[in-house]
Image 1 (tube, rainbow, N blue to C red):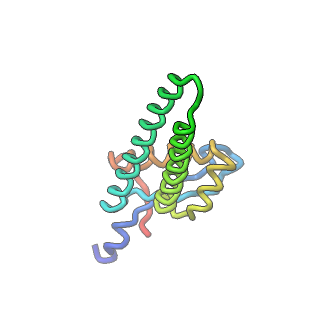
Image 2: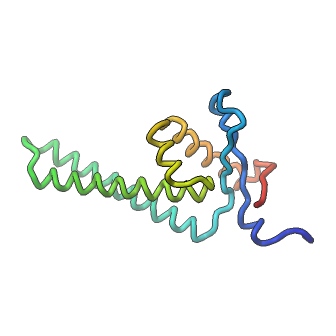
Length: 144
């Protein structure tokens, strides 16, 4: 382990070639962070909890809206507040993926808005790569 440094151990990344998604994107890569820190995992888990809580509240509000003949001002205000929460949660996801992919949150936000299928594919494929690496099925990754 003469040349091994803790910094390299903490930052193992796997290039993900977008050519897997479409040949026209071949050669464009995103480096996926395979071994995020415990602190990052805690923030990720907390964000998953926020997201799940929002989904639960949206379902409850949808049920209440279905029971109402007319949408009341109170329900509209509650809906507006939940939409603001959703925007905040989305920004948080963009920030987390910015760390995971080493891309700016603004670029991720733009990608999600302008090319949602590409964004979703990156989200899904990144999760697959991280699971493969955790299971010891991913042979090559780079440190740095």
